[in-house]
Length: 185
Image (cartoon, rainbow, N blue to C red):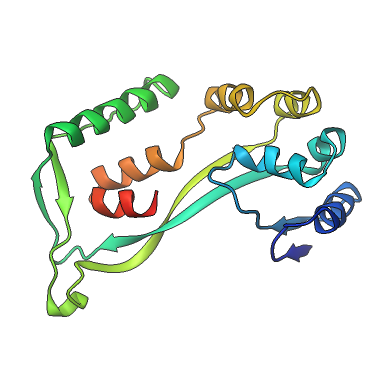
């Protein structure tokens, strides 16, 4: 198992790819705005698509958001634009999995600042994530030089959620706020 702090250069990328191709489990970080963009970023660094495809097994993007203090959390009516945004995200999620029961009651959580939560309304952090497995179909798209849009369409078939979609689900669960989601994304 090899942990590489960050892949920023062609040399580091080459070391990572060669290690992965020789059956080492390699973990590395890469600065992108989404998990999908990691493929294009590695190629822009200089990794050949035919080397990248077999070396990847999973790509994950994450952002940390503050968690609402459950002891002081309250709810308020969503504004019209907030409700429209939430409904649109839920519609997209429902396209991925029509069996999901996604309920939006028209309210959103609010973090209430108190002395107990250092006057922020939040306690702790949690991760927003987007994850996709590199299947044989995805490997073929990478080798064929397909765009992020093509790869995105394929991973959506397998249930891929974006950071925003994961964040909206966590807002609806009362775990974080829309303000915190906007701050981070």
